[in-house]
Image (tube, rainbow, N blue to C red; front, top):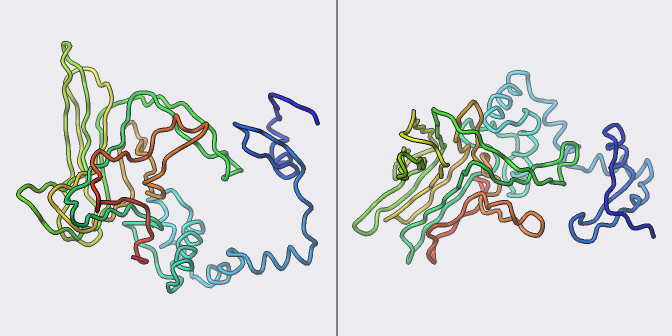
Length: 295
């Protein structure tokens, strides 16, 4: 068996390579071998007919142009096409045994962050750090099951707009209450670190709603910023989606669609920070991604 360290594939041959070859964990013990034999035409036809796409395609085709535009409008908030959002949403409905083909919401799409706080816990604090440089795991175009390490330099500029869509059902407990999503910008001026904070306060009981806040500028040189979701002195639930941390025309929030808010990275990707790191997570407090109608 030939042993190699690097394989370089011209761009024009990458699609053909993915179709012909399959690869194991390329970071530990990488093995490349030919794809297993393809099924017969009859078997492939049956697979297509039984696939999720085959099942949902007639429902999609039955929609009017106006109904498809509703899916398109909702998909804009999560950077999905109308067909992608339709498939993703109805796949989640199938898994949760819910009614299909329900019009989407402009305030959440498919999965959302789900925070629960039960006694003895009365708080949870999550943070997402944004230094000037950090690693991310980026999907490979044309091979969504693969990811590459990408080193990001987040060029900071003002204004910084933060935003969140959320649904809350919180009950106060204890003497001190705080429920908010906020950004803390760290800057240095004359050798002293300063922290400029701007927040979105959560209502304790509210249906899905959107709230935003903006930091126009700070004193000194910006070192970085951190996003926080902080709930102190409450029990109950909070759902959130479509996280925003926009500056320079780009939304820099990690996992903005809240698909995997409790995701941690391992092996070769261990250098990638978690999307949200718990600053305070007492027993009884949890956070994960869920499909809201299934809760």
